[in-house]
Image (cartoon, rainbow, N blue to C red; front, side, top):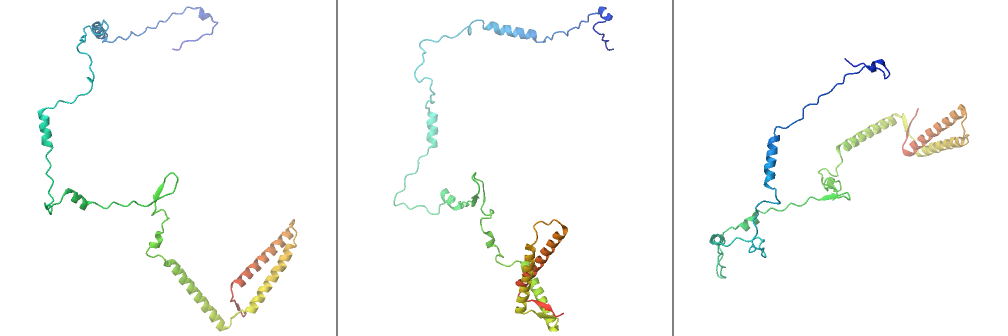
Length: 256
């Protein structure tokens, strides 16, 4: 049940309240306390004075001599001399000038010479940055590997196919034009007529251009804007016709 809280100035505050005492838990005591105290006393009593109780006093005869603390080699014994004599065998004498060498004997040095492998050549590399980054020169694109291909210098198949299709289309067009000319439906435009048509188209373009230059700069109504657009379209059509006639030398027209 929660305790009722009254205001500071209240009659109920005059009633004396019972004091509540909280009991603290018992202090922790280790079970090894007595053994630790005994061990500490036993070690402390042994060293009550400054240093150990009994110290061997150095005698004046055993003073420090020169080179006494340097490491010393073991003394030579008969066993060590015998081992050394057994390990170092006496070398054979030098052969005389008249002695013939033994033939057919393969030594270790000859075997090494016969089994040595040719060292591998380092792969050529290309350094492309100031920090030393490098890559293989073969795959860097700096070596013209394409000239070593099997089909180098040959026309690709798709280009051959395209050229063949263009040739067939040109042949079909030439045949169609020949048939139309034989039937009299088309005729070849002469050079004089072609030049006359070209000059006429240029004169018409000059007239339209002169009229276009005379237009007002400000197109403030719809009629001016429409007139300007008509002139631009007509000039553009004349330019296309002039380019077409100048591009092709031979022009066919129908008789109708």
